[in-house]
Image (cartoon, rainbow, N blue to C red):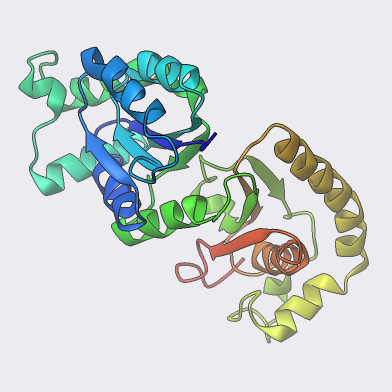
Amino acid sequence: MNIKRVVLVTGVSGAGKTTAMAVLEDMGYTCIDRYPVKLLDALTTLILEDGVSNTYQNLALSVSAQDLGEFKRAFENAQCDLTILYLDASFESLLLRYKYNRRHHPLLVSKLANSLEDAINLEIAQFSQIKDYATIIIDTSNSSVHDLSRRVQEVFSISSRQSLSISFLSFGFRNGVPRDADLVFDVRVLKNPYWDASLRQKSGNDKAVFEYVMNDAETIAYLDTLIPYLDHVVEKYKHDTKHHLTVAIGCTGGQHRSVSIANYLHRKYRKNHETFLNHRDVQESHHD
């Protein structure tokens, strides 16, 4: 049986569903926006009857909170390889986007809310009920369109969905914890290169900083605990048929320690997995 891949793209308005759908379309997915839930039976029948054809091999649909449950059941019953991509963003970031773009929130247009603030809060509450359905969550609060596009490409770039890809993300706690991380490791307990004047303006991408962090006894002991745990989680994700794991490593400013550890883990795990690396705060921070 030729298993069809289906991605249901959902999340709060303004979080980036349009961008995600455009990226998936560029990657070869047949993309459908606002497909009527009443016609789901016809669509799943069409997919099942498609046989070995590639016409509906990769399908992506943008789905509302109200309809997600029915879409999920329908495609699970059709024995599709189903992924639910949930795009999230903070209240503050959504408010800024709507004010900057001068767009009308859907709940204001449908007169279900009396103000932009009410509309955003109401939709966040609606989606909180179905967030647990998500296979993959991407938080776009601090992301540009380019950042989101790259992230979607990372998650869905694997030629075989039976594989597990891993993203390693360094960050600074002072700029907030990434809300879409599956695992968060705090490396602020490690020796800080910031207090060495010759390393202060460098980052963990520089050899001198990397060696300073990695050669310290505290780092070696830390990794002796972290790596067996991470190996366990990776195997668990594989057995649970998860497709993507996001590992975030944080220090104070996201410049030295977290970057060094993320670089080390990326090099280690890319030998046997498809891996991605992102240093969120390196360009924004000059001290750790």
